[in-house]
Length: 165
Image (cartoon, rainbow, N blue to C red; front, side, top):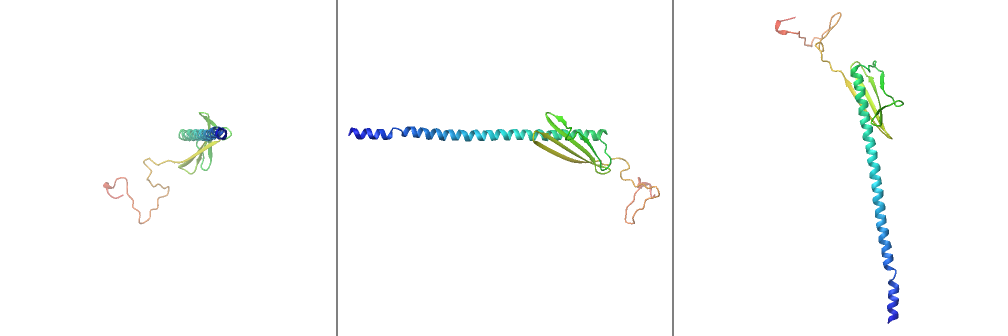
């Protein structure tokens, strides 16, 4: 009977080692998976930060182009463009680069296109600006040789209480 007990002990001898190796392999694979997820999250955060920095650089370009337009530094003729920095010679903003262009679309409207770049992230913004009439003569009709008014039009002078024109 002792011989049989020894054989059973010899058969179970390596089972704890096999179980420990399987357990360690499972733990190692879980750790490796968690490390990969953490690395992906880190890269994603860096990418988001670069995209946000590029967005803010484009905002800075938009602001600078607007200031140039309002102060008269950028006053393009209709259909032409004035650049505030270029892709080849960009302006800097907190480590990021930006450039913008101001285009006069017609007598009252302008287009500002600003681009910001941080590493490989590029963000572009565009806005259309328009002058709004705000003077005394914004609703006046003037003509050197007269003004033709259609029959169904309404015409009123500056003070209708005084009577007819």
